Amino acid sequence: MFEVKQAGDRLQLIGRLDASQIEVAREAMSRPGAPCVVDFVQLEYISSAGLGMLLGIQKRMVETGITLKLINMNRHIREIFRMAGFDRIFDIE
Amino acid sequence: MERSFERDFRALGEIFEFTGRFSEAHKIQASLGNSINLIVEELFTNMVKYNTGAGHPIRIRLNVDDGRLRIELIDEDVDRWDPAEAPDVHVDQLIEERRAGGLGLYLVRSIADELTYEYENRKMKVTVIKNLER
Image 1 (cartoon, rainbow over the protein chains, first blue to last red):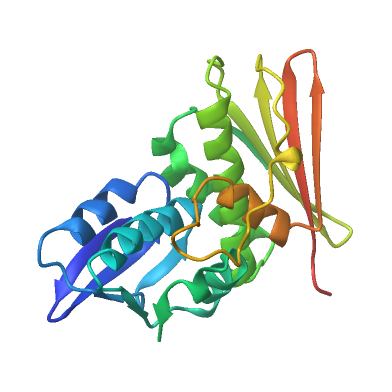
Image 2 (image 1 turned 90 degrees about the horizontal axis):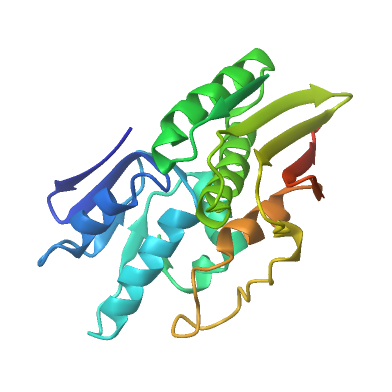
């Protein structure tokens, strides 16, 4: 199960972001005017497919001078970001 | 535990139900359960992507023996492709230079204690060993 919800000034990723759910996340995050703050508090799991999707969005945003802010990651997901070196690429709070 | 899955990303939901039952049966903590899911997903999706000529389901076998978790993925009638030889990912690159390719296998190698590959009679078997904390 995976879904994306907008809650005020942030996007919430909910459930499990695996390779079969990438298009759902990409579509929601690429929408014009989509918030740049992404809340991971209800995200249980992410794989390299999710990381790659976030990298693509971040690359496009950097060209316009905006960056994603990723907040409320659980310990496991934070460790995956660290292993991948993505903690140096993303603004993680 | 062992089961075969259709070679389609949409099988991931069923795969996670399978790994979840395994983790529950062996009282595996949530963080290790997530690592099992990650290893299985990365190897499975690579087989689906790169073993393109194959039509058989992919077999996944999980067991715990003497403090070692063993994860095996078996794919039949496929060409040779060794995930252990995949190029390293440069995690210190700047965002402009980073590419997503190879990241999944890099994560598997980072988490695993052992990663082995066997290929015989067009049958490919990838085995990951993870030592459990005692």
